[in-house]
Amino acid sequence: MRMFGRVFGGVVLAMLIVSGAAAHHGWSWAEADQMELRGTIRDIYIGPPHPTLEVETADDGLWRVELANPSQTERAGFVEGSAKVGDEIVALGNRSTDPEEKRMKAVRITVGGKTYDLYPERIKTN
Image 1: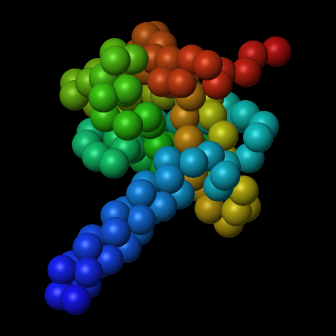
Image 2: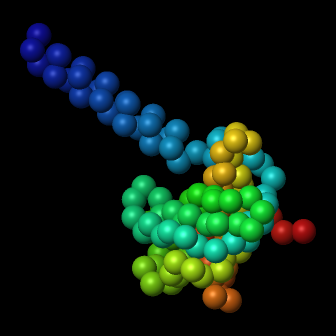
Image 3: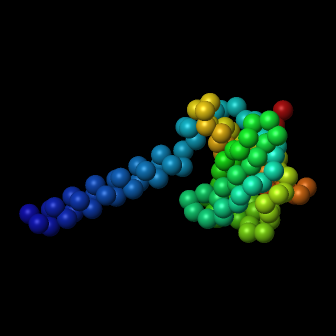
């Protein structure tokens, strides 16, 4: 019986981890339409689970811009030192469905004239 408890506990734990990861990595929290956000980088975090930028806009205050996972962000060319606090940025992405939340999942960012396609397959252009 003790072995069954350990196995059952392990299975439950694995299911919680997998379901949490699936919920975290989904796009269900973001609107389908894309928007462009222009502003100044106020903070940069490069690390798991997703690198993020805090971007201050002229009209709408401070936004959190989530990038792809660290490996995918690096493959796009955006690495430590690619941007610094104070740099101007243009981010294309999907904002949160919660209108009170100033949060965006970026599919493309442009900093210092260099463009980084984080999710090239998701970029919608007119």
